[in-house]
Length: 392
Image 1: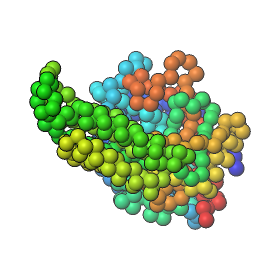
Image 2 (image 1 turned 30 degrees about the vertical axis):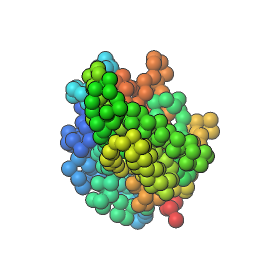
Image 3 (image 1 turned 90 degrees about the horizontal axis):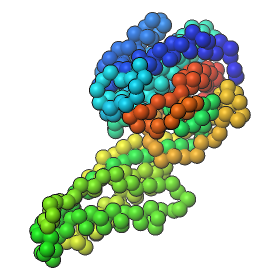
Image 4 (image 1 turned 45 degrees about the vertical axis):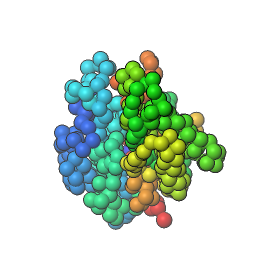
């Protein structure tokens, strides 16, 4: 399964680092990645790779192999997040208030590395490879859905991708068959009561207290309405309420997220959140309005494609370097691709060897660049295996 022609040499390793650092300096937000996409297209063109632009800020590189065969897609997400970077290294962000704080600069560099590995040895594998450089993973409904609607998966037999995980040790990787990442839907509950003087609470409808009761009651949904062995969470991540001393406020707002691994449970949880809001507000004599913003569905890996990623990672990193990933209730719009064609996602360790490791989306986030060659080799080797042994 290991092919020497897919090894990352010292020259390519240097390019991977240079690509990543360039991208890190010039981050762009979701659906605004015009310069990023231009840079990607330029790099692909210098490799002799055909570039298509199915969306304003998305790019697809197409490499034809040595003859007829399947088509395998490899995906990279290219957008950054609205964070003001606090790192002081030379290649820190030059765009105020925007930062690659999740590793997408690394993902993009890795798939450019895959492009280099596969394009210079295209006489060694059959079929076709599509390199998807996708905008807007950080913003629901996300860029993956946009690319799917643009037809980038037409004729694709399998798709693979990865995410650098800065909390996992360098030289480790994980994936699993089946559900691996959760859905992520957002809700907003607007509560309207009756304002008044704090000294006469009996003449008011207290929206602060009502919001607090809604929040407390929502916590019982997971603990009492969901099978304890079925992963699910309801997280309250924002509350707006309150007024001046002695004065009650007429409005309160509760913001939250629902995440789970099962599509039927996803629908039921939304209904239960709405039910809790309705009855709690009615008991307090308040009115309410609830709105939902659907996020990404659960990411469900195809067992065979996940098996190829697992064997590839184990062969490259050694048996101690791979583990079966337990499901997590984070979300990623790679899930949309997996709904259309057999696909699988990999987590790749990128923890720094020295210094304090900050979490993803932190203003001082960084990752170990030694993970870049590992990611490029794993995806390139897995792609070639899928091209030589198509998914049934």
